[in-house]
Image (cartoon, rainbow, N blue to C red; front, side, top):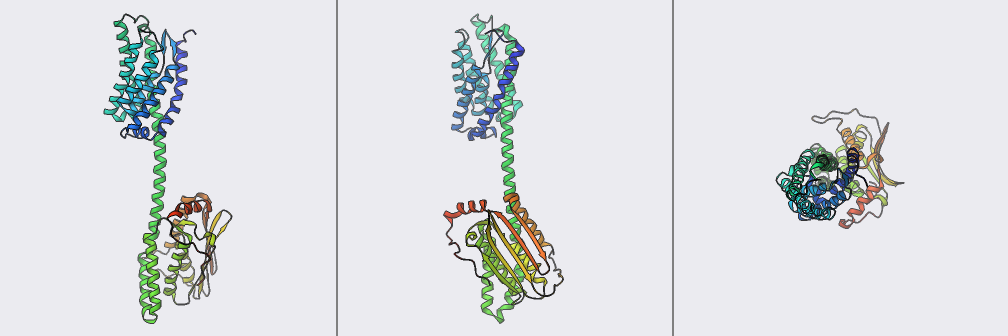
Length: 439
């Protein structure tokens, strides 16, 4: 096969270097090598992986060699350099030795020992530089510069060795091919590091975004917990104090409800059984019933047994029942009923909180230090939590009319069932066998 023209050689090598981008994907998938790309230390296992990867890449580069100006032009050095950058001197030594032996078997006897020695020196030297300057594994420009320096020494070593043995008559005149080899190898190493860092940075950004979303959901949950603490606690304590003299037994029940309510608020995880959410809401409504006045508030619960153990976000029902009382029952002169209904409809869990009130409406009274739109903010926060967790498949709607309002939450069943299965081994609770009785 006749030697390729110099321009054709560059085109051929540029096309083959595109495979380095695919090779970068493999490196990112190896935890130890990924840690090295992030600037962490090399673990023993990662050094072996780097050596194997670099050797395979070197053999591939040697087999893709081309004849240019009487010289065998190839990119096998890229594999040796990458093994050294990712694994350190020992990985570079192993890859350089293996690649040198493979390539020495493909060249003439005069060149073989110098090629082997130069390959070993490449791996050790690049590994020492990477160990002392770990930032080169994260910077494509620096990685390319290291490749350029190390490969310059490689060409110089082979050239001097051939001069000593009077075998340099073909090697030295091929300086354009050597110059191109320097540029291609340096560009190949820089390309590999750039692609690997791009992939790693995108993955790290995705992880950071997911963590930020999780933190935001935790913060919104904590906000829901905290906003119930001071104002509601004062009202509940006043209701208990007013009840103690006329009905001590009822007062004891209120204290128990208050204790259950705050224990749930302070200690419950992010997810809970739907039945627990409803029990939490009932404790809240029991206290509100006393605060509003005996007989003002009735509670009905309609819970499908199939939905009782489904996992839902904690404090899902709390802002709904709070909204039903504050903007429904409390703003009417007569009695009212809050109905909590939960059922599965197709592939969705549907939770409805309905408030129906009798009598004329009462204008809202502003309370010192209390924002009138606080519950609406809570509903907006809950809606944002649902969308962030379940996407557009989840929704929170409000259908309000004179004396009646219906708040409806829809959650896809898939995530709720997955969460239930994940929690089942640790759960010691008995699922509800029948709907909770209405009050």
